[in-house]
Length: 234
Image (tube, rainbow, N blue to C red; front, side, top):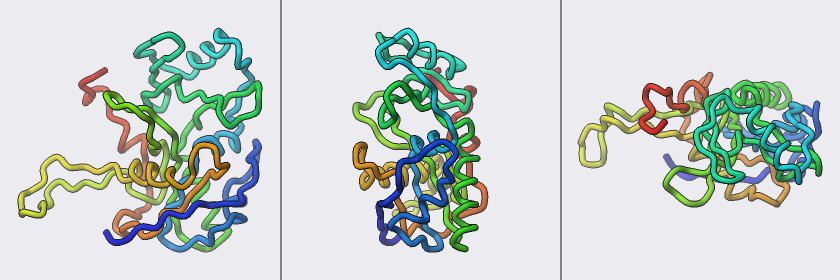
């Protein structure tokens, strides 16, 4: 791995239901290059896909009903905070239902299939630019046993979700036996550093990613979400 460059995509207008994100991204401030990884926030993906629900922000009972409706299982409750498992297998706060950066009276829901969303954006960018890029859909998650939030990938296309280093050697020649790196999570977190939470920037390009990581396919749901049989904490 050499040098990475992270470039915010500026000039993308407010996203509305039915918008084609590839069109809006191409009209932004970055000319895409082959091998770029385009990180797009969940919020605009959900808006474009119409994953908006009307809810009274001051009505906690109505809010809780939306959260419960998006969950397949509730793991913990503490006051208004609920840790749930979503249909896609994500364990997160409030089923990923979010009130930030949306019109008053609405909340966004997670995409039904964020891997499919990433594929759709990637196909659209290829059709409009002739350039082969990868796409990561990112969202902000809390982390067990650690304070603070970090962006992670909830969908990807055109990039390996996990790079398996098992069987390779460390700097001292010792064989790695358990090392699998969730590279799309690392790229999502890196991209968030130039997007922020209140800047209105919904996408960023990570340039210089190792070509070996750029593969057809890629799936967060299949490759990162840990199956219950392997989960020691649920």
